Amino acid sequence: MNKIAFIGAGSMAEAIIQGLIDGGMYLPEQIIVTNRSNIERLTYLKEEYGVNISANKQQVVQEASIVMLAMKPKDVCEGIESVREYIGDQLVISVLAGISIQTIQEIFGSNIPIIRSMPNTSASIRMSATAIAASDRVTMEQIKITKHLFETIGLVTVVEEDQLDAVTALSGSGPAYIYYMVESLQDSAEKLGLEREVANNLILQTLAGAAEMLMQTNKPAALLRQEVTSPGGTTEAGIKTLQSYHFSEAVIHCVKQAAVRSCELKEMFRDQAMKEKSRR
Ligand SMILES: NC(=O)C1=CN([C@@H]2O[C@H](COP(=O)(O)OP(=O)(O)OC[C@H]3O[C@@H](n4cnc5c(N)ncnc54)[C@H](OP(=O)(O)O)[C@@H]3O)[C@@H](O)[C@H]2O)C=CC1
Ligand SMILES: O=C(O)[C@@H]1CCC=N1
Image (cartoon, rainbow, N blue to C red; front, top):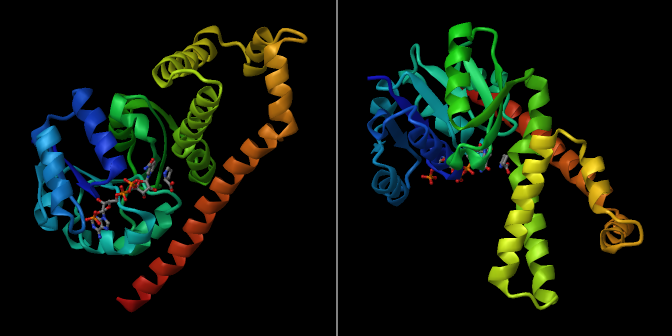
């Protein structure tokens, strides 16, 4: 049976697992998950989604045709080391922020085919925006399989690897920026005396409506904003206030810093991988 293994059982692994099962790409019994040591977490995933769990890395990896690396960047060396000797012709897909294909290959100690991906947590409801980049040994068939996998949980686009830092900053981290904006809208509604539930319903429908307007009308965001903004009206007063707080610059700096952090991670862990390699 065609199986997928997850090395790492955190938020991102769960989101992908949920999306893949709901999308019918894998049955729960085709999914096998392991982590470092948190048995409670594995038990939760088994109870919630019916997936297989195991602490036996050899069993997890050898049964699978796809191995998804889903640990934190800081755990990449230990995580790969624990499965390295059991990897044969499985396709390895990484979701790790900032860890380059070259670094992953250094840790594996061979030039195996690797696909680097950057999904987001909306994978759980099959609404991820995912970008993928492939190493030179990845076949067209493997790219096709990977695209199909990520299409099951949302939208997927193929990019050059050097674009993944920007992608990570934009759409990997992106949901958090939107949630932060929602938190601020919730706070403002409370300050204006609106009931929490009433405000939440209005905020969420406004958010969903604005996203649908952008997608369905194809109008530029600036034009849609203009259509809301009556001269001398309420929106203008609000937007002018955002501008006085340098909202746009803040967002630009936010995404830039996230991309810078992705580059920093890349450099940090490249050095660590080189040390691991020379230690072996
Ligand atoms: N969260 C997000 O929105 C996104 C995250 N990513 C990427 O996904 C990856 C995972 O992030 P996230 O799910 O948030 O992280 P979490 O901290 O929620 O989960 C990390 C998981 O990795 C496991 N792990 C740690 N060390 C090892 C090891 N040596 N062997 C096997 N498993 C190990 C942990 O197990 P244990 O609990 O036992 O230590 C845990 O299950 C990161 O690299 C991140 O960059 C990418 C896109 C979006
Ligand atoms: O914050 C992080 O590093 C990860 C990568 C993208 C989203 N979460």
